[in-house]
Image (cartoon, rainbow, N blue to C red; front, side, top):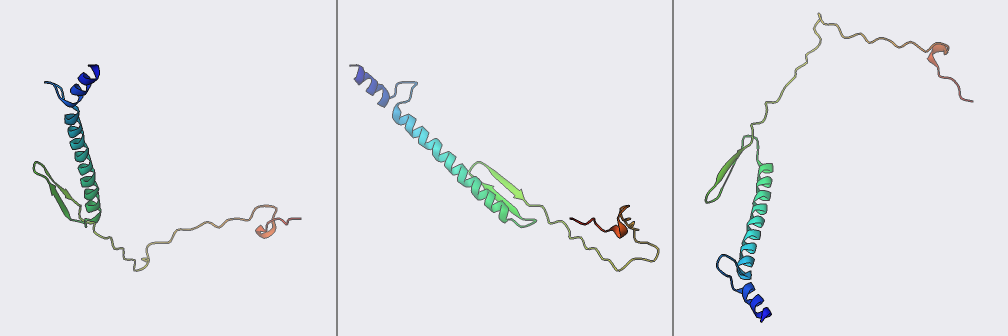
Length: 111
């Protein structure tokens, strides 16, 4: 009798409790929602990478929507150098002195 009661409780839900078929159905629905959300997120990431500066991506579902705007590209900076004006002097780079004890800064010989 014990086995029969266990099988009946597994396959036939009681009031306030789900049977095994209800549990498996809810579990499968939950897994499919998670998989759908993962695919949707992956597609959104790829679409964002493909957006050009100033572009707009609109997404939505039956009960939600969102817009993703890419910022405009910063203006390119153009630097024009026509020469050094006569009033500006280039920086002075100090000359290095040879170390003392070495003639003309020559390195010591290896023997």
